Amino acid sequence: MARRSRMSVLKRQREAQKRQRERRKAEKAALKRERRHGKKPGTVMASREELIGLGIVQPEEATGEESESESETESESGDGKPE
Image (cartoon, rainbow, N blue to C red):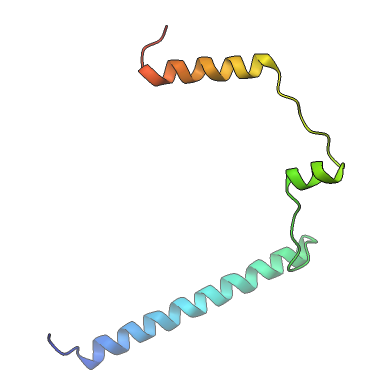
């Protein structure tokens, strides 16, 4: 295998350092946005299932009409021919 020139090695190192700087700047900006909008760093949002489990949110019950319309949509898209 051929030796790499010193300039190409330095160029790759500079590019890697530049990507690290940009990533740090983006992370810092994201933290500032979170603080500005009232979300504290490290705060985790509860999922819908967790809220239902705690009794805060009522579960939505699926109606028969919704399931019928979904099955019709699947049958139309499945064969590519409208019925």
